[in-house]
Image 1 (tube, rainbow, N blue to C red):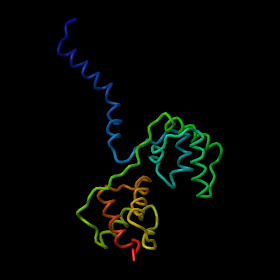
Image 2 (image 1 turned 120 degrees about the vertical axis):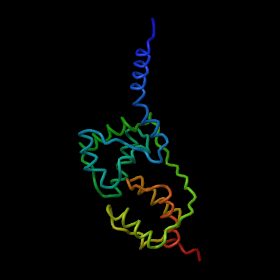
Image 3 (image 1 turned 90 degrees about the vertical axis):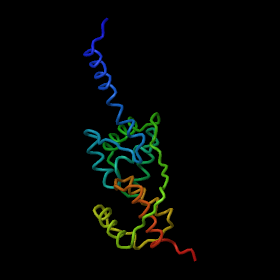
Length: 187
């Protein structure tokens, strides 16, 4: 069979089209945070009704659980919130979670390596940052709390897992400021 330029180009085009769906997966593997697509109905409605008021759906990707594990996690979270999931919603959610984040999947790693920062927030910069990035979702409660820098980092990382858009550098600037101004007095 004689290969022409057009046939070779057509083969390359077909190969590119076949490989195109794999690109987002490869890009996702290097991301600092997982990205989970919002599913179709009826799962979408069950998520909006029972889940997304407290956390983003990307949180699911940090787990790889069987049905029993997901049931326990849902029960624990909702016991803490003193809210129940309707049985029909629980069945829909469990089916989706086990299918997409079951024991045969690989959970997204929770490891975070804080970058070294050389620029720091002033008090005014930090307050503006908190107002611009946190106050849309909830009341800013950091002014009444004291924590170690490690505890502040855990809290801010949890907010990022819940959907807050924070670069690693801004996250660390905020953690440094919180540790400096709202840290635990070692003496």
